[in-house]
Image 1 (cartoon, one colour):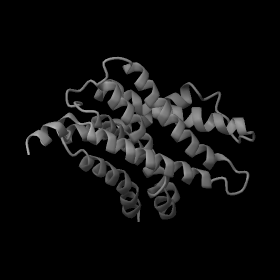
Image 2: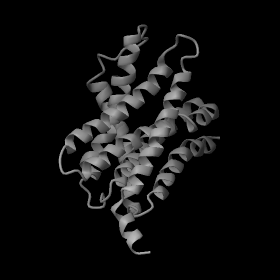
Image 3: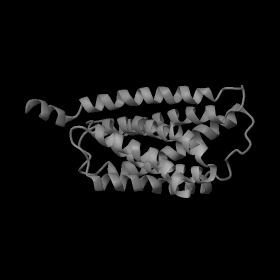
Image 4: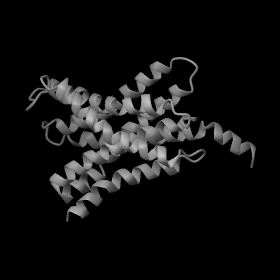
Length: 232
């Protein structure tokens, strides 16, 4: 039973990572570097826990009852901390790498890090909650983390190849991912009115739509595509 739960917990993150790998149509990243990126994502869980307990430990709201409490928990305590923890590894370990040589790579590396994070998180939840939790998170939480990563990665990829305003685009990337993540969590955290949780699925659908557009834009912007087109 434990092996079945483990397989269900690992499957969605690995499947999404492979999906993004094959979407990198023009100049794929080294497999070894992608595996390292995935492991960085696992490490980002430790960063998240360190920030949450050492910095936010005394300010976290438990048993929140006001809308503002839920907003703080969703956008700051959870979304910003988690997205920042992933961003650290992307910005300072992967962004300078010589293999980051086209805009789409921003999406690739952000997703790989995010799937490492989401996979470890998923294992912890599934081992505690069982098959029902595994099936639910397979189609919600793990894909949600992927969409947040694509959104961040789009701007990280833009920043890498701009001549100016690079820092601005990096900030926009982490903020955009945090906003998408925050709205998703907020609707899940809210208990009233009844059925408000449906908003989480609406926000996830919007994030998926934006992610598809972001992937297509960076695929078309690849400098390697121009080389391929000029050498039929």
